[in-house]
Length: 503
Image (tube, rainbow, N blue to C red):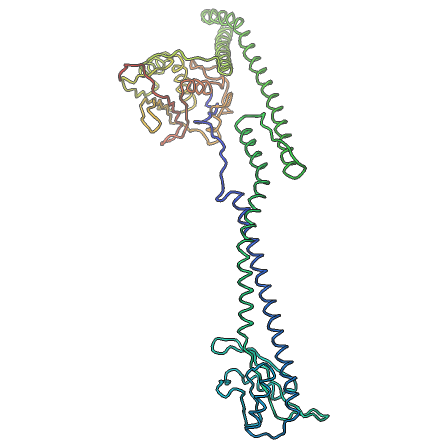
């Protein structure tokens, strides 16, 4: 038996889906809401900008046109150069004609205001005065004064003659923009108030869309999990003609192909097992006769010529090896057919291990640490098979000293018996540890296939049979590197005792 035959370590790992933080439904709803919110904010900003621009533009055009018409009408009867009183009357007439707006009239060093109590210094900027003084048409500027918005429109007054020369008279009208500001603010508030219903509607639509999209996805996910757990008959109903329907159809086709392949493989596997079992069974009768003849030849080998004696011993050894291979194949066939059964009874494990070592003549070659009184309900024959395979493996492929240690371990999963077989050889490479319990696997491909010793090794099935026997007891076998080199095989068995038994 080789140090092959890789184990299935522990319980089978099961696939479990990992849910990301926030499922697809949540992400879809958040996406809808964010898009709706961005759209609402963008629409609000554009609407506010356009509305504000339109309101201010209309106010500016109205202020400029009103001032131009009124100044033209009043200036027709105005004599230059004016005095302070005439300038004040001019300002008052212009103000009355444009809705009582605040009007400031300048002529050289004279300044008149329609409201003598009004403060106009910061509402007519230096830049606007310079533009009006050097220009020919109306100029305007929006200013903030004491936290409130105002529109100041200024224009020079020209003579009525043909060259349209400026007369030096400048007129400024100050318009209060608070009403326009309040109108645009009210518009902004109304648009903001409409944002919440839009976002809420987007969330509702997202939930409806998520339900429509995710329902078939959930069904497909459930069917995939069922397929992963071995239910190859799991299928998904195909509805519609969209991408999800194509995905469901592809899944069903994949499941059909997988089910057909699985059925074919199972059929081939069953045939192979039957073939092995049948061949092994049929070989037993001729092998029995061959073994009997080989035994007779070996007993008389000393009386034969040297070459004939060697041939007789070789035939005997190879016949014994072939017999063990057939027995191993039949044992594996029983495990595959689920026909292996435990013949369990309460047993002193230390005594069982010592008997197994003594039976094969290994007592002097193995260091045994076997505390007395370790008892459990096991199948003694199968424990003997496990010990023979693990210890024989260590003796064949490891290096001395080989140690066998029996112990009891209590953990969170209960009380366990451990039988540790360690050697001080080269150990096992990682890839060999992964396959060491596979059937017919041999870690040392270069080793010779000479006659096996009485451990029953050489078939490549020993560790696989040992593992199956351990599983039959509800346990397992693990392999690892030793702390000082070599390999360590550990048999773990749950402690089972008959009622009333003591340690």
